[in-house]
Length: 125
Image (cartoon, rainbow, N blue to C red; front, side):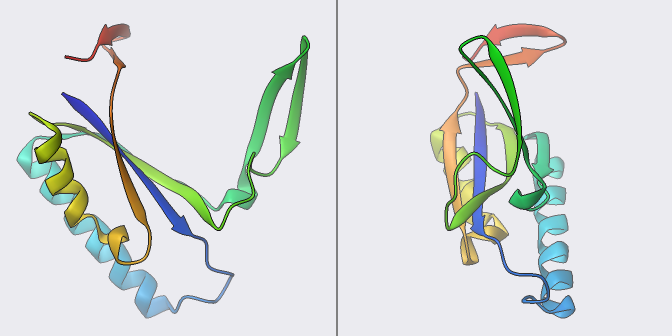
């Protein structure tokens, strides 16, 4: 069963996090991704650039609107996603507990409803 780990975290201001702290977190994230890969459960992962690099596209009343910036102004921003293929929720939660972002952010675990596999939508199962 596929689960998505939705990563949310406060976005620090430029220069607020030391280079040493950034390097440490990058190492932890690399180790985490390597462990997921070695276990054969990693489908995909993306860590996102800061929310101020976002462009939002909506269609309202037949008109497309393109705007700079995120849709919502929140304390925590969407920072990334990890898609896992694991046997059950307990396994997904065990991987979420190990995610380095839990030390300063949030990991939301959400089961997939459908997935694109080899170019075709497939119901989760």
